[in-house]
Image (cartoon, rainbow, N blue to C red; front, side):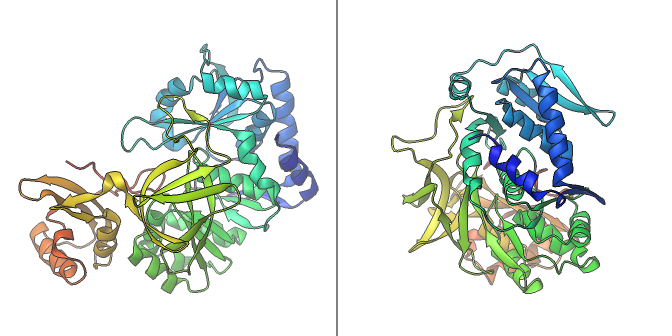
Length: 448
């Protein structure tokens, strides 16, 4: 499908608020006018249908309108947020970008790269006469993979009308969760609220100013929110729902959130750039058990790992083999526990630490460490050990003035009361920086 449904919803919404950036608000009528402008621009530009076009920008009314206009033009769109600036050249090369839009002196500029985008997956999209979308994996386990979607297949799921909500656009423009949030908001005449930055205080100020109802974010950000005290400086009473995903949620963080914000529903979400965002239902606000699926998805558990089949799955990678089996299922690599229809996500198979035959999931240990007073951030990973094969290591950011030796004593006493001895970190490094990346996702060292 094209973006006709969303364009129609935007016209119907008229003078309703569409996008807020800082104190500036634009209506759906104004957003529609920007869309019409960009449609006319593209019609008179050298960009043909099927061309690969990047947008180097963060959320703005023009970025949103240009994204929609490129989709309507049946271009293959590569959104690149400024968080990825150090990888722009890499992503442009992998994606074979032919045209790029970038901001200079507060105005969009168009550049022709001279590249020619030739790939069998791109050919599929062009033959369908459909728009495309390219996203990149985080690259935390190697080179980033270029994930190619038929954008019309992703758009189809938004034709079912759902709740109109005022939603914070926290997950970025080049993230499957960010695209999902944006399209859901526009398709349901909601208000997209863009914080001036993603520092906890600025997010809280945006929630207060625009009476946001939904905050989609990551567990790492929620931990920073709790530590920052920003929620005490702002009125967050408008918030009805916080959704969290992108990484396992530490149980201690979830429990603290539920206690601190008892009137806000906490909902765990699940999705991958390769298959999209599944509909989900948490057992309750302080439970890590969740149901995932929906009319467009099928799931199964194989050897303790979650596998997903999606109607809106990617067409493939530009630079890697297909991960789908003969039945169309993708092994996500996420280890899960199962209780009937409910699952609990334990962590990525690649991050499991095998200590003398015993499995240790980093998120479980991180949850325990985060309960200790004075701990601001932690990332747990495995290190080689001559006897047990592996041992548990942790990079920890603390707020106290303790020496490493003093902190180790306190940490081990704390952990010994809550987890078995083989899960207690034996190698501890005190760090100054946070362990998360620009997407507010915890980045652990590779097992060494």
